[in-house]
Length: 172
Image 1 (spheres, rainbow, N blue to C red):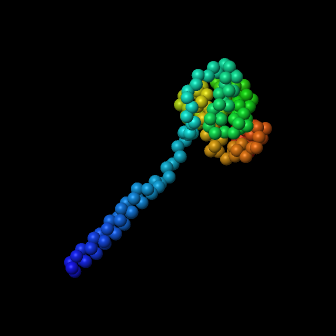
Image 2: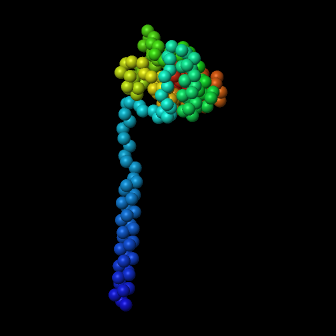
Image 3: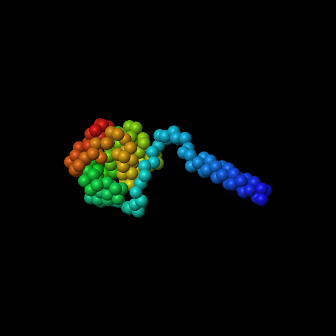
């Protein structure tokens, strides 16, 4: 009998030891990896939209696509409308427009913002497809504090004013 008791105690202790070992191994597996340095290129999340052929020469089609894209990406209707309004002001709904001052495309990107768009879209200096431009605009709006006032806007006019301040001057 004494032998049976000793075996049971040993099994119980072995089970406890095994449980602790497994718990330690599992916690090591679920530990967070150290933060990775942020790369200069950006990769904004894109809504899963089917590819569309847009006639860039037709401003009505471009306007409709901008509204559709931002609504699909979860924007409120007035925010999507403000994005379309801003595209009209910036480029006249011409996604591949370029100015003498070096500003380009739907939202007239320039300087570092233009280089980031180019890297994201892998456009290599050419006009990126409209969906890539919209995805990049979405990334900027969601990830830079300069655009916080856009998200605080309560209507189309406030959102449009926020875009003029944020995208144009880089501040709210």
